Amino acid sequence: MDKGRLEAFSDGVIAVIITIMVLELKVPHADGIAALQGLVPTFLSYVLSFVFVAIYWHNHHHMLHAVQHVDGRVLWANSHLLFWLSLVPFTTAWMAEYPLAPWPTVTYGVVLFLSAVAYTLLQVALLKRHGRESALARAVGSDAKGRASLALYATAIACACVVPWVAMGIYVLVALIWLVPDRRIERVIGA
Image (cartoon, rainbow, N blue to C red; front, side, top):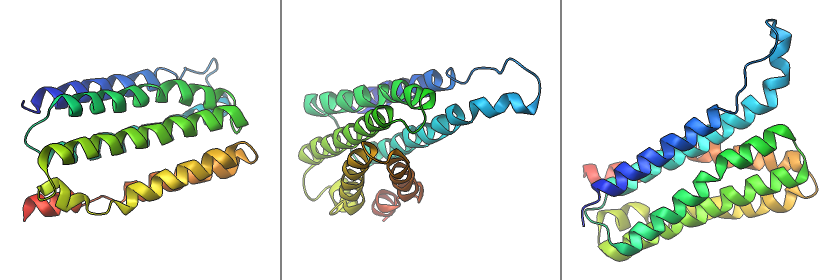
């Protein structure tokens, strides 16, 4: 089956996720700059989560650009990814409400970890659909970046129980790793 509907649906869900997150940014009840100080944790949580969701959208777009067709396995794997991403607004709001508290930080990390697992499963489903010689298989290669991200998330979750600020640093590190544009798929498709 054609991949167009999958792309359109995923784009819509991701747009809703970002919209829900921004709705957590409440207008201060004063007009001075000092009124913004209380919003700093919420704003920083939003920025980090926006970056993560945007990274997933970019990589999802590139991954689907490298394939021709989808099947039922791919549809379910994609729905699994969207499920975990849909929890990002909840964990973002909880973490913003209780900055650097262990349980919100752990929960945020669990959602990031399971989103990464779901993305990996989607990638595996697409690779099974298109084969080892496909453009996607050549582009993904060993996926060292993806495996490193999973390991970093697991480490961050463990750290969050004891030192939540270290976990937050690791979450930011993973975002920075993925902010560097991943040109693997563009190179393979352009070749």
